[in-house]
Amino acid sequence: MYLNMKPIILVIICSLIILLIASCKDEKNEDITQEVNKNGAVETAVEIKHLDSLNDVLITTHKIWVKNILTKEISYKDTIASLGKTSIDAENKEGDTKKVTINKEYEIFITVK
Image (cartoon, rainbow, N blue to C red; front, side, top):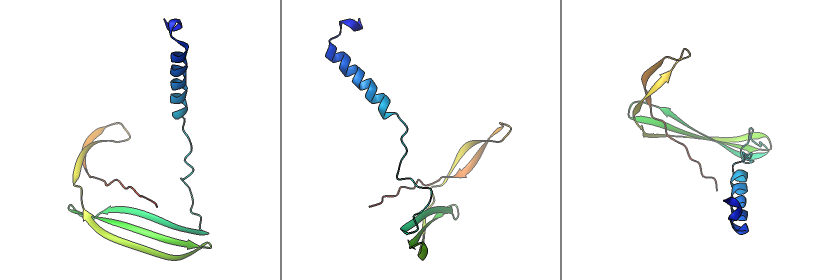
């Protein structure tokens, strides 16, 4: 069956398979770093803490590094609406499951320009 196909179709199918396999490789993202270049950088930390049942606190902290010296630290706190609560199944070390209620968490997306 496959031998009766035109050669160009076989080439296209093989090319697509090779492209698919090549695109599935785990490549190391060079943009991710384990430490800050303190010679000249802006280090930003974003954190959300639960304040009460209706509100959360968004804390944004910027550290300005120049020549390995922390020259300035800026912190902002904003009150934002809580997302409420949700029920999930939690499991302990022994494998026992129990339904628990937890606060919903915000997802944090950062755009750098």
